[in-house]
Image 1: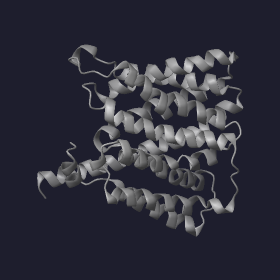
Image 2: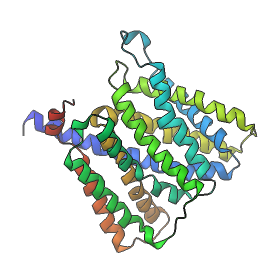
Image 3: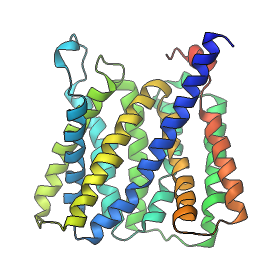
Length: 307
């Protein structure tokens, strides 16, 4: 095995590890939001607190080095738009929606993010990165999620909460595509971009928090939930997401939405002793097969001009 094969294998393993970590951390967000809301934390305060904690954590790890950009840094308006699409709007939509929609349904509806991403990236992104195999992977993954969640067994009525969750999924996808096109090509490192974008999101989210007029001091449990959401579900996931966007593009990063239900189902079986239906095992396999189709090989990346 040559050095190129070894590097390719390491890259593939790193890609799957990053995807798994992102899915595990991101998938727990809905549970922690439920905890915070149940403790009386308002959606507006929850979202600005989440963004503020994440900003402080990201800044502590990798404060932007403004002098190293050589005039090729990110533009403020691009940072504001990216933070609105990928942070402020989805954060607020999900928090408001989960007042009336369960965390489980919220997690399942998040699987529409890859569908939005493949549509948006094929239309406005770098079209050479979207190949037939990626389209097939997104479609296969969606079928697998349906087999896993079995939506036909329940009934999800169209409500304001469901619409907000779908809007949040579309926002994440649009944000991913925009970040790949306008922010990642700049001289700023992923950690620097994550810090600046989250800071911009905090400023945007301070507006609804100020307008809401809800300044009640949260309980200790509620405050801890907000801190966990900010540190684990936001700062940690955003750092991984930015690195994956830089190396793999929007669509292949967005397929994390398909892995989230897998993580939720497996955790439910292991921690809560929930029973897995036979179709769920098949669905997990189909999801992983679909995700595998979207992961580009070293040869694909070379053809697409990616590192």
